[in-house]
Length: 79
Image (cartoon, rainbow, N blue to C red; front, side, top):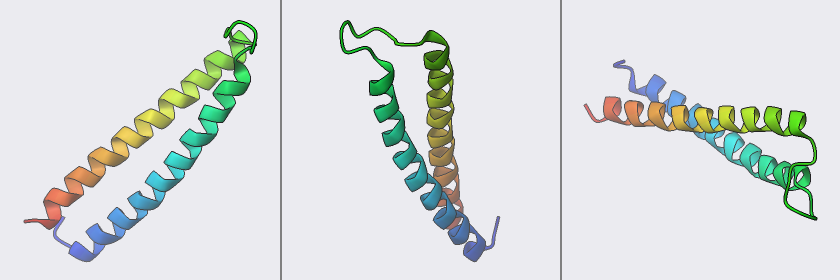
């Protein structure tokens, strides 16, 4: 991609996505605490916890892919 203005706009949107993902990850950490029993540290509900773990993994994948895209875009603007 040769259009630096477009690249900069994409990078800006990725920053918004990254901020949103980080806030979402904070919320997931809070939910994780709520899903864990205070008595013995076990899961309160296996089905909910499994789905929650799936959501957490997808958010981690989103964050990873966002960082990969930012890295690619950074190489495009330096050429």
